[in-house]
Amino acid sequence: MEADRELVEAAQAGDRQAMSELVRVTHRAVYTQALRLLGNPEDAADVTQDVYLRVIRKLGSFRHEASFATWLSRVTTNVAMSTLSRRSRRLVAEGGAPPEELADPGADPADRSDALALAARLESLVQALPEGQRQVLVLRDVYGLSTEEVASTMGLSPGAVKVRLFRARERLKSQLEATERDVVPLDGRRRGRRGGRRS
Amino acid sequence: MNAHDQVRPLLAARPGELDPVEARMLTEHVSRCAQCAAEAAGYTRLAAGLRALRELELAPPARLLDALLPLAPRRRPSARLVAAAAGSLGAVAATVAVAGVVRARRRAARARVVAVPAPPGGAGVLALIGRRRRRPGGPTVARPAFIRPALGRAAAARAR
Image (cartoon, rainbow over all chains, first blue to last red; front, side, top):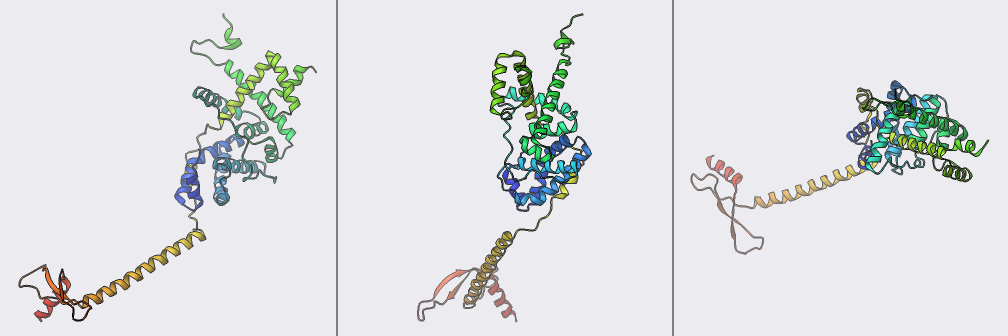
């Protein structure tokens, strides 16, 4: 998803081809984030279009202080949340501080591969969370907004964000562990407590 | 409520989300409670999986990109670009003007060149022509030149 700086600068200078390439390179990430926040493919597609309308309008004000991906993620968050709530609230400033650094899932290729495999299992579990918990979790743990930014974006108190976050993490961890207990390995026997039983 | 119950809600927290007192309480408890240590490890793994989720992109509907690409506008060039373009045009105009003056001087110089009639039957003739130096009374220097247009006009005049 990462668009290089030259491409962004060319788009900022009015190069239509660069703008098209920028859309091509980044639209999957925008759509994915919108879908994770909204939980509905049609809404996510609509929000993606609104995001690019806003990007085209505001690209000139992007100053490369954060990465373009970070800026685009913030625009997506704001458009998605305002679409969702339909009520005015103070939005996360798009030119604001970069989000809390999210550590690389794993510098070691094996760790990285494990983390990506785990992420693939988590996708559907995250989608199944109650909406309020899902949004808080996605903004905080996936896209790295601070608790205060999540609170501001969602019109909640930081305390309410922490409570939702704790519930979402607890639920997700428990469902993940349940899913992994139910995985049937190649020898046909289940793992974990149920898998340990012998007939 | 014992220490175990107090610590349990803290296990899901990520580094930086707890105040120093809570963080110390959690560290001390986890160091001597295997059950809570296992829980904490589970949350750490979950956090890694959620961070990695950002790298996974979901496939959008096939027509979404088709709808997005026309949004890229043909923007007006900025004032700075317009100024730069005007500067370039000015430079081109100046170059053309200078070239015109040079060409006019060359034409004037060519008018002083005396065309030598072509030898009989000579097409594409290399003739020796004389061109006077500006110094009056100086020697006339002959130099070779290929003077197709002059030759053509001279031949036409003879034919008349």
